[in-house]
Length: 395
Ligand SMILES: C[S@@+](CC[C@H](N)C(=O)[O-])C[C@H]1O[C@@H](n2cnc3c(N)ncnc32)[C@H](O)[C@@H]1O
Ligand code: SF4
Image 1 (cartoon, protein in one colour):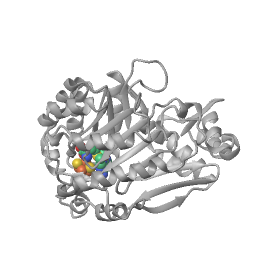
Image 2: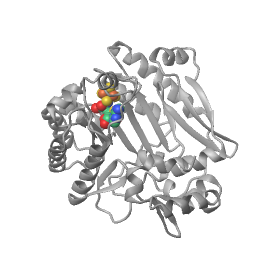
Image 3: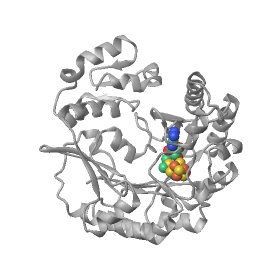
Image 4: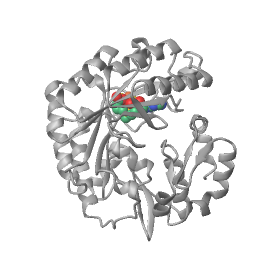
């Protein structure tokens, strides 16, 4: 298998907006979790997975391993090394993009960052979220803007091949001026890659309760849309190529994909297969006879119990029909600025794009939401603003 996601469900403190599968104040479980993760990876390595059909675009991707969370940088270097040794039985490490998410509040020491690089982690993704200290406090982040910058500079000095910064817009109390200042500062830092997410108000979060009780106000949709447009303009003017709805990267190569594009996320957007390990992780497998997604057990206890019993920690197998595969190939691929190639669609789905979606595409082109040529179909800038509504047409 070429792509592997590894979930690390630990955080120092839960942020008020986040509903990712992660837990605070259970640090005493980390080592047992790492042992279980290595056991799961060993099981995945021995399961027979025939090579899935891939398009030329998907075949061009490097192998990838992505440590996501939670906060993977709560692990020691020894623990990360143990996981990488187990992962290397699944994904060849040579030439792999190995990404690790990090919270700048874990106060990444220079030795730790250099150690990560020496282990082969070559892409660091720092969750900065905002450079406005009052907003960071409302969000429950464990760092301020200055500490985030310090972590970024230390990561730079450690020598990572690529550094991504995550930011969120549409945050509580955030003004257009705050966002303009944040954008100006980001481009001075010159990260290789930027992910700018529009805040999703998730129901089960403390922020949701605060907003619905009227204690915290969010910018309205128009203001958030203006923030997105400001980002598009500012980043384009400063040498960042947008290649996905929320993702931007510096590039030294001509072509639709910037040289610092995230290979692992590209595998998702090209609807490639991938394995996933860890509590609550999702994997995606397609062979001519078996197409499914699997979801691992969500809780740390449930996950540890399955592996203690020498069983795969899978909670659910979700079968995928050929129609699901077509719909997902469109919905994921249209997130990319380069859109979906007819050859890619045919290689992935075994059917011609025009046969499956000719009618929908013609309607959306007439509405000014899609554009197409003989080889590809992609979202117009207006389509990108309401991407989720466009995607519904392919369900
Ligand atoms: C697993 S976290 C990143 C690493 C690390 N845990 C951290 O927060 O610094 C992945 C990213 O998802 C984004 N995110 C999480 N919850 C979100 C929400 N409700 N709306 C928009 N973006 C969100 C944040 O930008 C976050 O950095
Ligand atoms: S945003 Fe990151 S640090 Fe905050 S709770 Fe979510 S995973 Fe943990």
